[in-house]
Length: 518
Image (cartoon, rainbow, N blue to C red; front, side):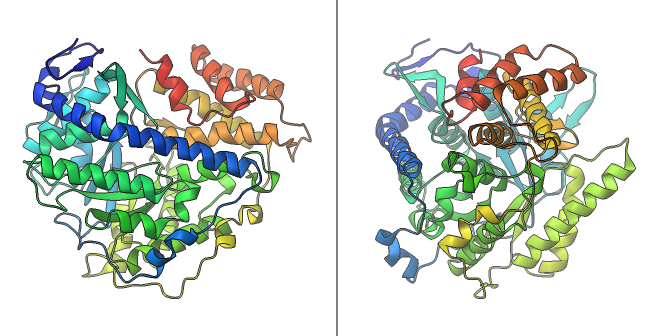
């Protein structure tokens, strides 16, 4: 369907879609596309050039050309209203039920996710925006097919921070000049357009690999503010440091966004994926079983310590990683062990100086809050803890070879099972999936399939059986694991094998998955 803005909508129009896809909103999306999509594509091409250099034997390091930024005397903007105290943040997709549960959770911040915990099914893209607008207006309600009603509570609600898709993902249902728009600009543009007058527009920015990509976001924000008559700095953004290259450019990323900056987050699951992806052909970067790669192994410890040090040096919040455990109402022992691990993880983060942390389930909000309450006492954050004792080198960040752990059949089976189960749900429109008492999203699925690829293409033999990891072994394990589950997983299994064992490494599994999505 075309319209007067020159934008073509190829997705169906559901009930109330016209409230989001207005002529004015689409005109704004067209402006964003024409102004910024060319630069977005250029920056994606630069990613490819960097990957080629790494494949040819190159490495990562702090940039000599930005030394003056790292040595300069500057700070980001003061924390914005609703973002001074971020001791516990809950994450989740923007379907109506999840939106209401998150806003009733007692967390300080809700990451309203249009990225890894969501799928870009057309209905999710548009209806998620409707749910956010209704939630901000206080009118959102939901009744499940079973007749259970959900409504927003009267108590204080978390500050909403919306996460758009990464720069690499397109939106195939919205075309400008016959070209798909950027998923990032679509998600940002629709949320900003419909809500900037009713609430402060805050964002989480995923998957960035350089300060140049942060500069692009900053220019988008300035353009939107000026276009709609909002003061500079109205928009605030927290950047997820979840790619290996970005860990070497944290100060530069904060600098580029400084009037719009709300800090950095340790996006640890995607960070593990990025470590594998960037050095996937180098045996010294082969990781052991996913569950062996804890936050205390040397290269992960260096990354989080540097993040807190960098943020607090510049007056920015440092937000910790995800507690992905899903409490079980059937197995108290599973809960006891898992909650001990969650508490230990959050205690370590609070002790390291993080200003808050993430949870994936409302039942974990009190656990995280209690630990940060004890650390913060009457302070809203720990920005005064400068962590000048921290000194992290390039070698520390690159010390992947020092990670203890093995390559086991159980680890391989878990990777295959989780990967296929997640993709099965993703293709059907669900992006946050409880598997083995863990909330799995696209990031953990990426770890699963990239570890299989890495083990296979680096000639790894399983420590416990001695069997080499081959495509045939992965196929056999997939068959055995899926037989335990029952049901038809043929489409997900085929996609998993495509992204896990093919000779060429697919940049993001969500790209071929999106091509298969209606």
